[in-house]
Structures are given as C-alpha cells and as structure tokens.
Length: 156
Image (tube, rainbow, N blue to C red):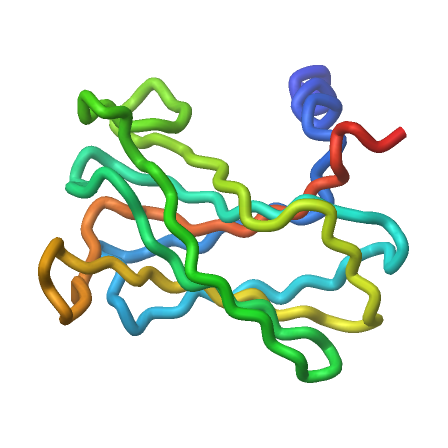
C-alpha cells in the first residue's frame, strides 16, 4: 500500500494545488465554485487548469465557463472560456474507463503570483442553448469542478 502511494505522488510531482468540489445533481447557473489559493512562490511561473468530471448526462459538445481570479490587492481578472467536451462523433473527451470522464482544461500558462497573500478563484458555467438569449438554468452531467496549479514541465 505504501509503495502505491509513493508511486502516485511521484507521478504527480508537478502538482502545487489540486482541489475539487462536488456539484449536487445539477450545476445551477448562479452557483459559483470558489477556491482559495496561497501560492508557494512569488517568483516561479505556474500553469493553471480547470478540472471537470462529467457523466454521459452532459448533453453538449462544448462548455462555456466564466473564471474570475481575485488578487490579494483587490484586482480582479475575469475570463470567459470555451472548451470542447466531445469529439465530432459525439464521444466524450477526457480520461476514465467508466461513465465519468475527467477533463483537465487549460486556463492560464506561465502565471507568476507576484503578490503575497491568498488568491480567490471563482468558476461558474455560462451555457446557453443555440439561438437562446437566456442561459441554461441548471447544467446536468457535471459532477465535480476543480482547480489545479502545476509547476510547468519544461522548467529545469
């Protein structure tokens, strides 16, 4: 058992922060998932990811997210992001052998957290049906939302 744990940790040595929050039943459009992050180094660059777990109940080929990062000094950066969730044939992207697929989605690359203190990352969905102005109220098929910070693999 100890050997297995050491092996898993060694395989993920570039992980700095990795946390998930579960979504009960459906992800409501007003439900904002929050992550508080205290970066370990203010000089090194990091890669940032949004992680998602979805089931076959997810009925769209893409996903729109609004990701907001609040800096310790009060500055806020907001991004609207689109991710592909399926191949053209409808097969879900991501990893996993069961009904649940895990997706590691790029958010930002080479970020240096220059300010000391806690950062707050907020994630919410911004899905709409084609041709509709009103957003999708409750998004089915998303089970967990995560945020991950890694040390870039190409850093020596």
